[in-house]
Image 1 (cartoon, rainbow over the protein chains, first blue to last red):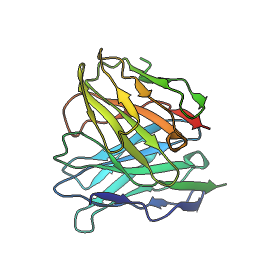
Image 2 (cartoon, rainbow over the protein chains, first blue to last red; image 1 turned 180 degrees about the horizontal axis):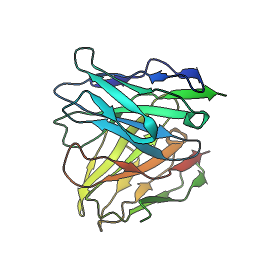
Image 3 (cartoon, rainbow over the protein chains, first blue to last red; image 1 turned 30 degrees about the horizontal axis):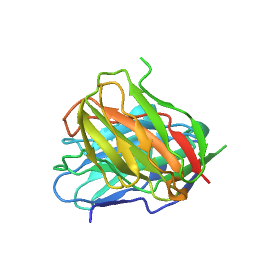
Image 4 (cartoon, each protein chain N blue to C red; image 1 turned 30 degrees about the vertical axis):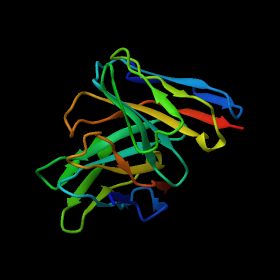
Length: 115
Length: 114
């Protein structure tokens, strides 16, 4: 079965420290990978995506993600966290040959950045 | 450019009532979709449309209907609401048939069925 796992329900980090939000996936074929962020009572905002090419993808608000094919992972990173980064983060994968173009989402990771 | 808009923001229904959740986009996107978000489960695809006049079922279509008469609008109808349909509903759109295209989400509708 195709799936996305976000193993941490919550990640706590101090402002100014680096952060990592983990994501692993299980799909057949070559996936397209996405990260979205959701602020309270808001919709999902697109952060970045991996399609092909360089394994390190840079996105909005200073976030980046590293694609690792052998470990089937797509971890989200930021060198220096801000309090305003506190939100719910979703990893998603689109199976390459899925004609519905559906995104398979992980269960989400809540990031809490303390001052 | 408003992006993807949804109405209403909040709705409370009684079991058995019907209603329509509205979704519109002004980006001339061909593809539109509806997801529901439940605690601890991420988002799951309900229905999708690859263009006006074309709709298809996603992972969890039971109890929902859709239609796509225009490129801009993609309403989701609950035929007879059930407590299991209590959820947050998100509409999304993307440019076309490219698998790598980014999907853009609306602000969501929080629905409670009593």
